[in-house]
Length: 392
Image (cartoon, rainbow, N blue to C red; front, side, top):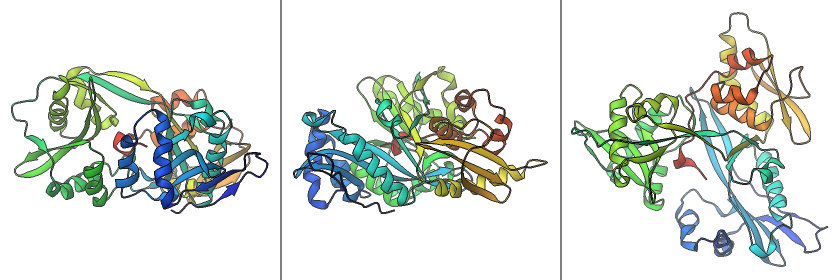
């Protein structure tokens, strides 16, 4: 999807201009990103070697020809289970020059970029942040994830795990499509993603061989005191293979690992008694209600159709400055203005409902609602995971 629209804030005495980036802006963007107190080299791969990046995905605030703020939109197509997908505008690399902070530049930039993304038909926006108050002003709500921490034992003697090579990638891509097909949260990827990311991200991809064929994979990042599991590719009926991959991946840090895993793979860590911790930072909000209704239509309406005596379900939603709702029938999902009898869902609860379904975490966010049975019928608990591989 293309997002491109310029806007100027004429009332701003500094002559602020908000616009998408052009190819000749990238050097300036990389210089601005060093205001994170990290070197340019930390960001260059994401802007010079990521084959999915387009300059217009960067949004800039400019005063008198000087770049003072930046954010990047990361387009994602997320799986919603059983073949459904949702277009997501990920928000990342939000930065303001140190001498230009606390002047509202990030707010103006975010407002313009989100408006353009909604116009372009993106259904939803997600981000990770340690500044929730900034994004809550723009209609985002918190939807915490969980992270598992464990210390694995040594790999079993039958472990046959090795670094992946380019010839493995078609099989890895095939496995990922199969393993993640019915999950909610993983991004849709193609072989070009695997080929490109292998050479510019710098993360380790390990594969497990069986009878001369790749049977599973794991993507990791070796941190200072632990290994972060970025993605685990193993069949849910072969948890032994998952344990082998995890144990081998964690070896560089004496078995210490952290992982985000879907419910179907959490059993791989059972022998090591993992600790489950809240992982704050994920926030989400709808952008286009018609696009969201379209994305949810096949799953939510078919689940409603499986109910013995189905009746229309109305999901009320609190949006910035207005109220809206989704009406679910056996024939589809429609976006509608106004409010139903039930209290509206805040953006965090809606994000959890859309991605996770009514699992234990979502039910905590939803609270005591009279319509909880209806919500559980259209959105039962999902095999949810947002792989760190796809983060922004």
